[in-house]
Image 1 (cartoon, rainbow, N blue to C red):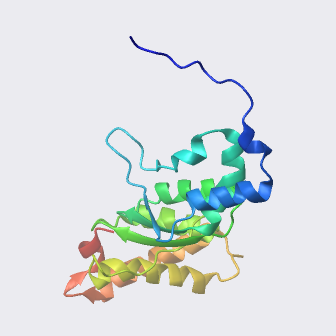
Image 2 (cartoon, rainbow, N blue to C red):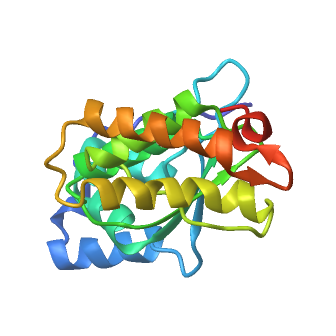
Image 3 (cartoon, rainbow, N blue to C red):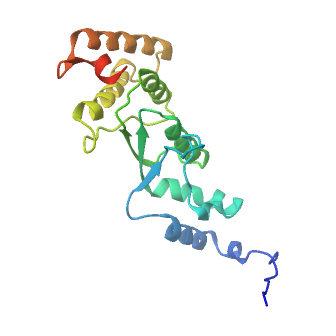
Length: 199
């Protein structure tokens, strides 16, 4: 004979604990010793800006409100950006900022060989606006050119407009001129950058 459990709609005694004790429990549950790899690539039928949060943060709104800043502020995250598609990275950063964390430990690497210029420009624009971090150079899975050329373009944005006083459209025009110069004059292993990267 099957038994059923009655739903417990009584008060939650967890929130009777002191804030200090609840925060310690949140740290014990949410803070990892190792870095957390964030998958922004999505799944078939899902957008690329979907990534999983710990289930504990989804138990109720009060826990999400109290514990999200600990999760985002005290963990170290690694985000891999496929083919320079920055939509998932933007979603991660928006969520962290919405939880009150403007500073978080985040390393960002690109993955995949695709390097469309429109994706690069979208990432650079978000970086220029202070919405996302730049790309770190990681040649462990990519060639040096694939891994480090994007990070040098971020450095160029910083050199062009270190105080972020220049309008983005002017920065973008300069970047497009530099892209054209690199394609005509500079080559990587005998191939123009535009032909090599498809930018």
